[in-house]
Amino acid sequence: MLKRFGMLWIAHGSRDPKWVAGLDDAWEAVRSGWDGPAFLSFLELVDGRLIQDGINALEEAGVTDLIIVPMFVSSGSTHTEEIAWALGIIPTTYHETDMERLNVHSNVHWVGPMDEDEKIISIIRERAQAITIDPANEILLMIGHGSEVLPFENAWRRQLHRFGQRLRDEIGFSSYEFATIMPLTVRQKVESLNQSAPERTVVAIPIFISPGYYTAKKIPGLLEGLNCRYTGDTLLPDLRVAEWAISKANERRAKEEALT
Image 1 (cartoon, rainbow, N blue to C red):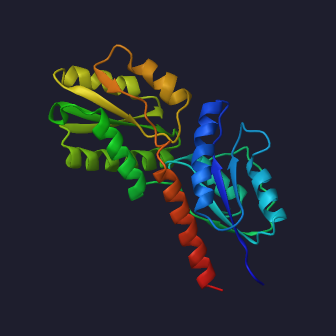
Image 2: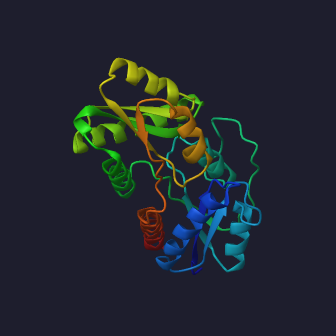
Image 3: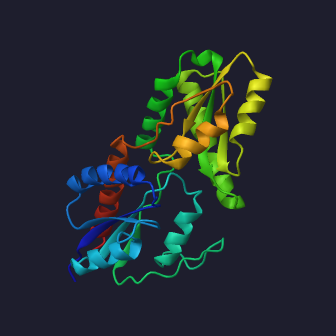
């Protein structure tokens, strides 16, 4: 049987139209680099564009094989596990989920989240370079979403640690630390750094996909009154996010086509 590949992007979703618009803009760039049907879906909060909507649209277009690109920063996101379970990619989940199995007739091929892809790291590096003034007298702080489920929390910690270590060495920061929203450690971490090294400014970089509540309100509120520089710039609108998605999807399709 001749295979027809479709690409399904899966992002978290938000009630903030600006957050969704950031994904939509990147999506236009993705579609130009993908040959075949494609759909941008959301885990929740975006009516008419949920994961099942995307599956239905692609299968109605004749797709036999779905390339799944989860638009999440880290494998430490519990959402990536529950989506993989709902798609039938893994048999069980470590943590409880209220998701239900999705109705899928196509073959499903999982790409995996961003993690430490070089295109993503290059964006973060530029975000740090844009905000630093005197890196030798600054402390880099990586801020991620994090997780309160231990194996996923550890995955986030490893990823943020490696990001920080690389940027410290490449840009020349005096040191680096990381903090998360879950568990909430942002303000506590900066207060501790201000106390232990009052002569050094903390430079905070959010590792989030698109601007939204966390980057525009939650984190700035937590940093208020502290010796910390923060701009809130996220991975999007940088189109290297789209390049990452296209590259991974095309690589996976080529692998599957080679097996036929």
